[in-house]
Image 1: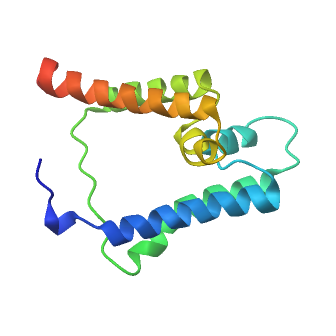
Image 2: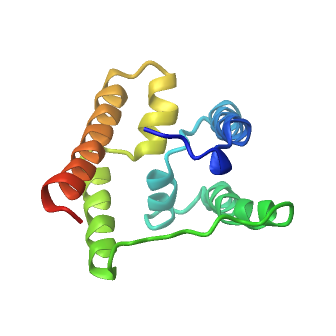
Length: 144
């Protein structure tokens, strides 16, 4: 395996991870809530809606962070080689997995593991194994 030195950004990646961890810590310390994106978004769609302000603020931060970052540097160009049906199927599978696991990668992987949750560790290992298996099957067995 070779590292693409032109696109290797360990310091930016470390800074991004620290910011994500800080945001998750602030949310749990000051609001008592876990930074699980599926739960935050799902809470906007359910009743009662007494806690919409922080949910909207958190999601707005997720949407506007890349916009703000693009003011300082040229954003990377996303290259998606999958077709629209594949992207939609992948989204549906991720959504189903999120419901089945009672949380998403951010809730389990970032917040759950840091709290020592065995359930979150198992969920995150399952997410990762499914991703590894999918890439292996797609690249080596299907040949796409």
